[in-house]
Each structure stands twice: as structure tokens, then as C-alpha cells.
Image (tube, rainbow over all chains, first blue to last red; front, side):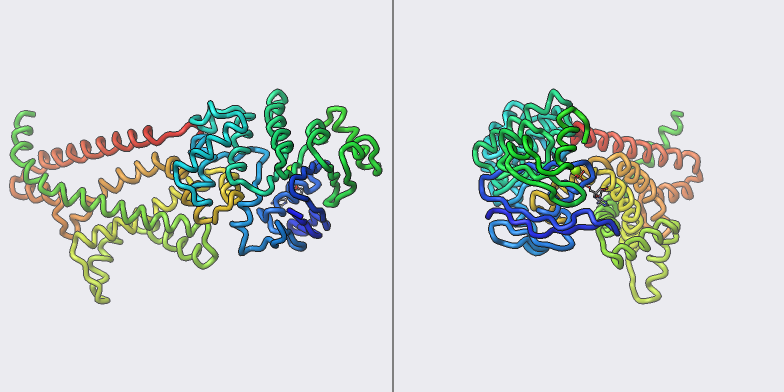
Length: 244
Length: 219
Ligand SMILES: Nc1ncnc2c1ncn2[C@@H]1O[C@H](COP(=O)(O)OP(=O)(O)O)[C@@H](O)[C@H]1O
Ligand SMILES: [Mg+2]
């Protein structure tokens, strides 16, 4: 297994947010996590790369356990794409993508830039390489941040609601980049309510509520024949344009 | 006016002989302040409790006492416990330690103003905390701090004049000497004021150019 998430518990203060979450991902798989707001989806993703270390439970990447000691090297295998992009404000788009290989992977400056241009091309942003993040639209910023993740040549990319900070007309360009990555065999763990993406690209959909996995299965099964009432109620809300 | 110009032209060379001392004192002190200020800012933001406490006490002491008192303490007080400096060194240390406290606070404010997501994104790439600070946070914070840092630099340029109190013959001390020799205090202090105005204007302009040169959209 590429990723093994084993019985993760996480509390903030006295409130237990994650109440024992486990799942696995094989190389090349894509999984979409859905569930109501405040349910702990972001917390779970942040536990997976120890941005918030779990209180209990273990994370394995390619069989190696993530610990406080190997964190910085393990994070190079597990990239993270944020809801609000978090591109480095002071760097041009191409430098945002090049900085990981340059500073963390031992690339020379020119090799890092070559790779950065290649990854920008992959997300369709070659023409904006010299722009600063503030000069990009939201959709372009998110694609640039996906390129930044790709330049680490990670084993797995975590996406935390990559389209929910975008105006509706801009989500399409990001979703199509994600579709393309999935079809190229990238392993992706995606928190998202984009049903279109889940149907097309996901091998499995995980429905979470109250810090637990309520139901999981292939998108066809989960969307057409959900077993749990809560899954059904939730899908009803998002399919009818509500904000779950 | 023309009498003053004649007076100024006559004594300007002697006063300006002190300029290297004034500028050397200022630049050395600002450099000490920048390095120490950066360390103090780091300690106040990321330090564990004891390190935070030490840095905080330092900042409070140096901001809470007059710089003249600090300078007299270093020049006249420390020799009693066997630590002796020549006047210029004592002045550099005093102004350097003092401006460090202020520079630390300005820098700390600037670092705080960088959105938390920048550090998170750097850490998520696999950078350590220190590497993330130096490659991502600091370049942004430094750009944001330039206006305040410029004010501080100009303030300290003027403050170099108090080094005259411990016998450093920078430009103010030289002006005073001319005053006592000629009894034209009005003229000579007008001259020295003009010199400070020219210096501070030039510095302000240069730093504004720097600010423009490193400006980035969105910062
Ligand atoms: N750093 C934090 N400190 C305290 N509480 C937090 C923190 N991060 C998240 N929470 C709380 O944890 C709960 C789950 O949050 P989150 O994982 O962001 O949910 P989701 O992504 O599913 O909307 C929320 O109630 C949120 O307020
Ligand atoms: Mg969330």
C-alpha cells in the first residue's frame, strides 16, 4: 500500500475531532472524501502529513511510518494543495514551482527552473510563469499551486477543497487539471464536493461525519445506492446546490 | 545670509572631517542592530519560554531606558567591573544594542503580518521551520518592514550626535568646538542642522528607492 492511515484520533482542546479513522490507498488510486462542514476532513488531511500530528494512530507512506523525525523528508513524498492556494507571495509563479526542487531536492537553479516550466505546462500556465501570485486569477493560483506540488514529484497529493475558494466559473479549469492527473496515474486524496470529479476520477468515495468514516465505496455505489441515511441526506443537500 | 555662507564655507571642512566618524558609527550600529534585532525577533516569535523571556526582558530594558543613560553606563559604568571601551566603540555598542530592540519589534510585527498559510505551505513542502523562515517568511517580512526600518535608520543617524557626550569627535562635537572658538553658536548649529537635514533626506530617498525596487504585487 502507498498510504496506510491507521486509527487516527485527534482532539483540539477537550473536543475530539477525529474518532478513529482508518483507510488505505494503493498506488495510482484516487479517493474523494466528502462530508458536512466541521466534520474533520481538513483535520484528517493535515494528520496525514503531520501538519497537525495525530494524538493517536499511525500513518505509513510506502510502508515507512511518519514520525517527528522523518517528517521533512516524508512530506516531500506527500504534497498538499490548500483551499486558499498559499502560493508564496514574494515569488513569481515559476519560482513558486521551482523553490521545492531547488531548496529541498538538490536541483541546480537551472534544472529547477526547467522542471518548473514543465510542470507549469502540465497545468496550462506556461504563459503566466513570470506573474506574481497577486496577478493571477484564483483558478490560475490553484493550478500554480498544483504545479508546485507536482514539482516535488510526490507519491501522493492531498487536496483540501481545492475549488471551494473559487468563483464557480473558475472551478472547471482546476477540476480538469485534477482529472488529467488522475488519468495519468497520480495518487490523489481529495476532500471535495465536486461530484463530477468524484464520478469521473475517484476509485472510491469516503463519506465522513462527526470525525468518523460513515460509508465508503466506489462512486457509482455511493452516489446511486448509499447504504446510510446520513450519506443520503448529505448527498441530497449537495446535489441540490445546497452548501453542506 | 551671505555672512553665514562665508562662515559655513570656512568651517565646513573641519566639521566634515567628522563625517566618517558619524557615518561609521551609524552604519556599524545599524548593522549590529539588524543582526541582533533579527535574532531577538526570532526568539520572540519562535523561541521556547526561556528564550522568549530573555529576548522580551532585553527589549523592555533597552526600550525603557534613555539611550544616553545606556551609553554612559557602557562607557563610564562598565570600566568599574573591568570592561573598558574607547569612546567610539562604546558609542557603537550603545546605539547598536538600543536599535536592536526597536528593529526586533518592527521585524516581529512584520513577520506576524505575513499570513500563517505561508509558513504552513513551506512546511508542507518539507522545509524545516528555520528554512521556511529564512526562504519564505523573512523575504516577505523584510519588504514589509522597510518603511519602519527607514524611520529607525534616520532616527539613529540623528542619535549618533549624543556620542559627543562621551567624547566621540563626530560632527556635532566638532561644531560645538567651533562654537566655543568663534562664539558664533547660532551660525555653527545652523550649519550642523543643515548637514543633518541633507544626510537624512538622502538616506530617506535611497531607502524609498530600495522599497520601490524590491516591491512585489500583493505584498
Ligand atoms: N487548529 C484548530 N484548533 C481548534 N479547533 C480546530 C482547529 N482546526 C480545526 N478545528 C475544529 O475542528 C473541527 C473540524 O474542522 P475541520 O477539520 O476543518 O472540518 P472540515 O474540514 O470537515 O470542515 C471544527 O469544529 C473546527 O472548528
Ligand atoms: Mg475543511
